[in-house]
Amino acid sequence: MVFKCSFKKQRWTASIAMIKNYGSHLEFRIESLSSITILFGKTSLGYFACIPDFGAGCHLVEPDNENYNREKLISVMNTIDGVTVARALKVFSQNERSNLLEKS
Image 1: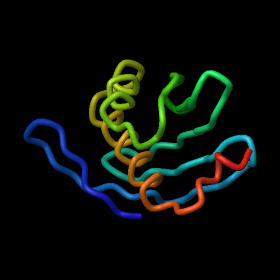
Image 2 (image 1 turned 60 degrees about the horizontal axis):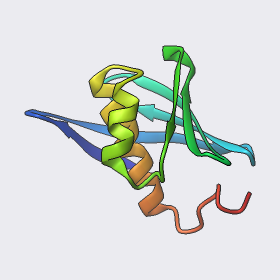
Image 3 (image 1 turned 60 degrees about the vertical axis):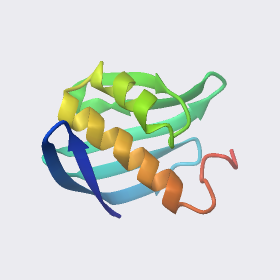
């Protein structure tokens, strides 16, 4: 899935290069200005994202709530990558007809 990202006057293209469903969580590989591996899942408290390469993680809300998730992700990683991950989650949620995590 290829998508566009923007922050202030900066614009860039990114893609979800890989999605793997582990049942309890998803692993995304996002290719952009950086290559980012994201572990994304759902708990009793909502959603979460772990970004092992950044030594970071945070709680999120529904994947289509890009604005809230962007702020949370920017607080644990750099701005450009936080914007990219939030956008990727929204694009994924809009394009995935059967949400893989809702079934668990």
